[in-house]
Figure (cartoon, one colour):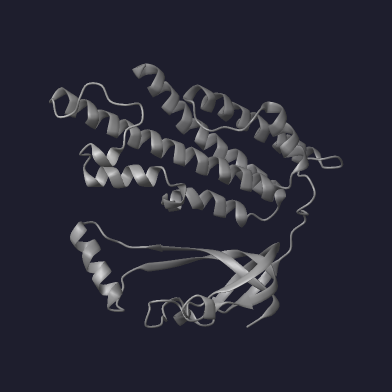
Length: 288
């Protein structure tokens, strides 16, 4: 397979229904035997990517099924059915997949250009109202995040201009990147606090000196292995596990019927995040 072509790229998630360490180990063993209990989920809507100059490079990756190509996003498509579901599970001796999935898909029409703003000149009263609500919600969240010392959007002026000039796809992408930065920040703060508490306990017990250097190598102070693993993951953004709670609202936006519906969903999920952030701010200020 080579040359230019279009593909649909839906979000795929894999989860296991395991409650104990023993179940996890059993699942790993079953998966190694080709009897995995993993649940594969594919979202019914995906981005249509136009691949330019597709080139197979499997010969350079030890037989791993792989292609390289430049691409552009052309729109969305709804997946009706997968024609070769076995492609998700068929692997070679090295455990690598040997083919891509093929599906029946239908391109979805959209009234919003990727280059036009949601609330720019010439848009209707309804769009302007929703845009104002979104800017207000983002500003409320920005002020709370500032008090919480968490990632936030730049300024009220930036948000107002961005909402006016950007299509809702770009607004959703901006929100996703903000949420991801916030999750990374919160996870780092949580793990760092746990490490600090552990160090204080060790210092009180006389197992660590009272004065430690500003930069401490956590692997050399006797920190338990699970805490070291959490610390390393927290400082490696790509290792962060994103749950369905993170993706579900974004997928709702992806499948919304029009730009107004997408913008309204952005307002709603921002208002939910405001509640969470306000609670964190109140707790932080209460505890000093």
